[in-house]
Image (cartoon, rainbow, N blue to C red; front, side, top):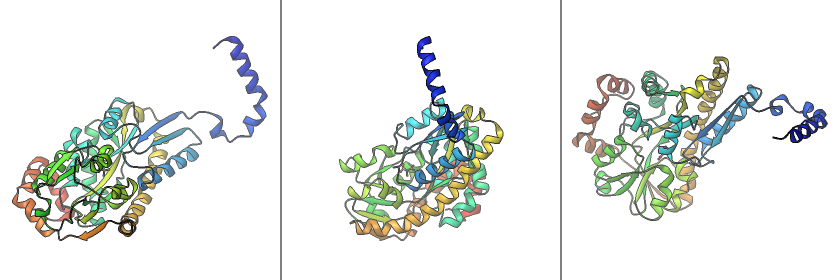
Length: 339
Ligand code: X2X
């Protein structure tokens, strides 16, 4: 900057001084901390709606000292890219499921995704806000990342495809189905007899449209937000897995934030998460009707033969051995014996 520019800028500032002074303090200067948040679902999804609300609240309650900038819908890259950016510090915050790409870094984080483990939300929150959650968060922090206490709800997952309703495991035989990039997810669908492909969510719509895969599995809030109903006809309510997003942070970036400010920010985020859970649970009920009205055919599914198929294929034994007796015991404390 030249001296002349500096003088002119200074003069401009002086000229505008009355106006600037009238503005609230938080708009008068840049934030001390600006953290980007990356997510893998469209802006309309309750995950992003409630993260936006949290960002507003954080700005107000820290008088502009802390700013959260939300980048939904894989704007910063697909899950695999965002996880790398988070680790390098290029991205400060990332929302990811412990069963999704996070499990490629921290395999122990995937235990919440064991097939047909959770029967309903009371079991989910009892486990994830309780001992299983504490175990999972300790595994994630041992892996070098910061994780906040509350896990954001994605919901119970159902299988969609464009050729037929799935009512029994045989209907999945050989079906080309997209699952997230995850050993547990691949193993689950292989054990059920399908032909799963691991793929980031960023590519799912196109993969379904071009028939690279025939089906995918996700809850209604995602099907609706990502308009997957445009490229899928049948939705079979298998509820084969509950899934949620952990709020992850880069350790170095978070470590630079003073403890008092950390407390304010994390409290606001965790409170927004509780509101998000209620919203998602309701949307996953309401959106079924809307998606049906838009032409999707839903069918209920008896889980018993699917569980039996997994047991017969050795799925539960294999993952019990992988996760270890202690972690498996914590899961079974919440959901009962898994065989
Ligand atoms: O990738 C998916 O399917 C998604 C968006 O549900 C997850 O993040 C697990």
